[in-house]
Amino acid sequence: MWNKNIILLVGLVLFASSPFKPDNRRINALKSVYISYPKQDSVLKDDVKIEGSTEISGFVRSEIAFAYDSNSSNTWFLISSYEKSIKDGILTIWKTKEITDGDYRLRMQVFLDDGTIIEDVVPQLHIKNYTNDEVGVVIQTPAPSLTEENLNKVTDTPELETTNLSANPLVVTSQKVVSSLVFGILGIILLAISWGTLFHLRIK
Image (cartoon, rainbow, N blue to C red):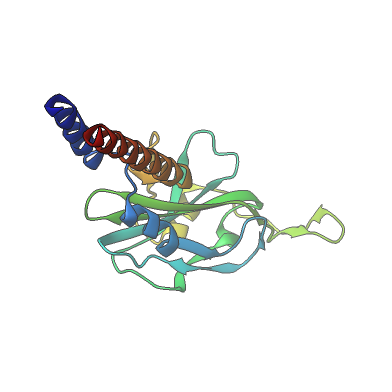
């Protein structure tokens, strides 16, 4: 009987320290950190107001960057970086006339004081400053190319900042949250079964 009690106690301790248990902070982060505009498949031109929210406990700073939609190299171009959180407001201005027409994606990252990075990505954004949608032809106006000089203007910083990083294990995604919840529920079920079995054996 004592051996079974010891095994049950060890199992309870392991479950309590398991990395798969639900993380309420990460779940709440998905609700607090987001880009509300522009939406996927939006057609954009001129100066675009990027709206959303970065207000979350433990906020350190946020970064907003863009990349080509077919971004296989994971290279991002910084638009802005802030050390003050914003709740449901304008996060920054994206000057789309300083890049060529095409398909892009937008990424917002929020860095927390425990090292966690929360991100929201909006894909398939169509920049069309120099394309006439009605006739499907390009307007005869010189389009700024994605040069270092223009990119410096977009970032509002002296130098172009790019990142080329592998996947960060601290980045929170919906898939990680679902996996955490599933493992947490399974652990609770197993714990309930163990207690039921122990109680049944004591009755006998």
